[in-house]
Length: 264
Ligand code: NAI
Ligand code: 15L
Image 1 (cartoon, protein in one colour):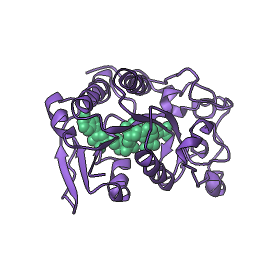
Image 2 (cartoon, helix red, strand yellow):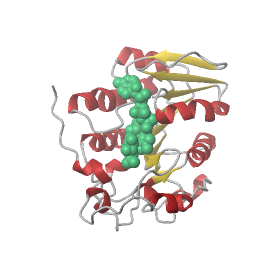
Image 3 (cartoon, rainbow, N blue to C red):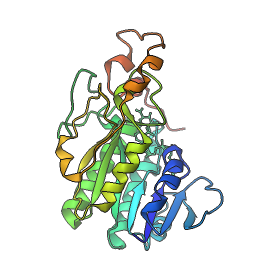
Image 4 (cartoon, rainbow, N blue to C red):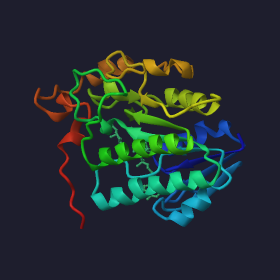
């Protein structure tokens, strides 16, 4: 493809995507509200706030595909989440509609289903159970993706990411871990398939103790390779958590224990 837009490119996942997905397009347009440093070869840098409608319209122009990572990535006040994740998603989808409907990957989250207990095995057609305003904002984004697909044919991969980090850092992440290698191989498939539609995909590696069923996306030809078991000995050196701790009971872990943060 000619130009791939990556929003949230200054963030933890964005910084990895910047280097590891560079081969997917002739030009990578990187965007964030935060500083993005110096442009490398084949990079365009656009600093903008996703809540700025005119700026997002300009941002999306001439893009063939979008990896939408930008926005608030943890529980925050309603107003902060509103700007980045509600208004931001509205602006992105409207800009895409006005600019040829480039294929989108929407970075959703396991916090859409955070209140399911850890002994439950989930398919993507089960009702959401968000564990805070952050999770609610991701449910909103998923609904927007479905609505734009139904109404206009906009294609989106709704990626419900577990824990996309170098390695799991606690017992819960043994189930939710998503390796960067598996993320990259998924992005390669999602942007290559001739028809995508609007599937919901669990963003997790092939963890032996995982909770989520991706059997509905066999047609995508993506097989995650990593398994958190290689970190088990290291993780089990951590003290055991009490049986009634939120991170032992719920799939969303400690997010379920967050208060509703009040706007200042
Ligand atoms: P991050 O917080 O490191 O990166 C998000 C980026 O979005 C930041 O660089 C931030 O400056 C930018 N941003 C925030 N508000 C913005 C606004 N109004 N306008 C423009 N840019 C704005 O998060 P991370 O870990 O890189 O996650 C990337 C995406 O994946 C996020 O959407 C997050 O919700 C989602 N996700 C990540 C998971 C993970 O394990 N890393 C798990 C589940 C979902
Ligand atoms: C998320 O949605 C967050 O963005 C990330 O920082 C992690 O907390 C992750 O979920 C998780 O649940 O491990």
